[in-house]
Image 1 (cartoon, helix red, strand yellow):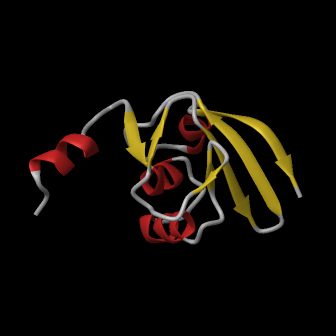
Image 2 (image 1 turned 90 degrees about the vertical axis):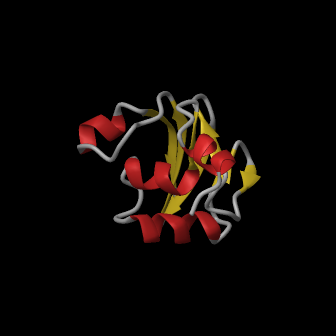
Length: 100
């Protein structure tokens, strides 16, 4: 059962948990994979290492996400409300760089 404070943070439209964001933006196939990706310490949020899946992301934040041999650097332009289609997901961020 969530406390009132935790429920208020989860429902705040100005921020979103990083694991949910990774799943909504289709960097992970399911929520469990997104949580694992966020908690392994390989993802960076504004240059800082993410080690917990509950870290909050806001519009304008920069994420560095490794996937296989690629590293995606993106800026969040809008926070999605749900996991939608791929074009919807891509409209919520801009790619700053994709490197190997």
